[in-house]
Image 1 (spheres, rainbow, N blue to C red):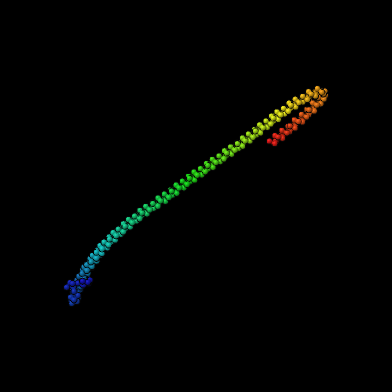
Image 2: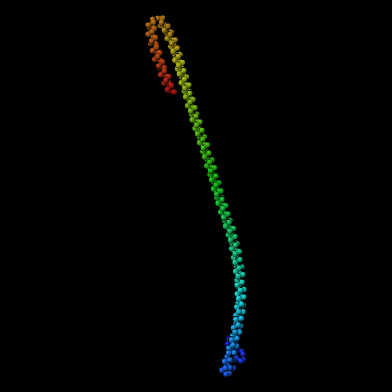
Length: 230
């Protein structure tokens, strides 16, 4: 039944057109009230149907929303689990990389410290060896200097001893020569004293003294030249 139509027999349009105006007016009023009631019922039925459809669609939409929310929750859970797994793996990988970098840095530092200690030990060993060689060289030089000084001293002592011996020999020879010369002179003087007088002996004595002095000077010059040649 459409809106505006009625099934009431008293309110049909045919009966309304066949009556008098007063009856027509009252019938029209009744028909209008009935139509209004029918329209209200039809509107109510339409509203109820729309509401049922709306509620049905609301339930479906609610179910769909719940399904979508469940799927979204599951997807989010999967995403969160994957994100957590990836984050945990990345953290573990980053920790492993950081640990490897830290170990590499520690190894480099340890190797650098070992190389520095090794270089320091080698440098100290070379320095100690060089200092020992220098000390040994200085000791050898000191020994050589001492040996040369001792040799020079011994040579000087030998030269001094030789000079002393030479002087002693010269003195001894001079003494021997003088003694012999004096003995010879005394013998000659005694021999001449017998034949000559005192004046002749005095003249001869002066000549002999000058001859002895010149002889001693010549011997002295001869020994001095020999000493210089040494």
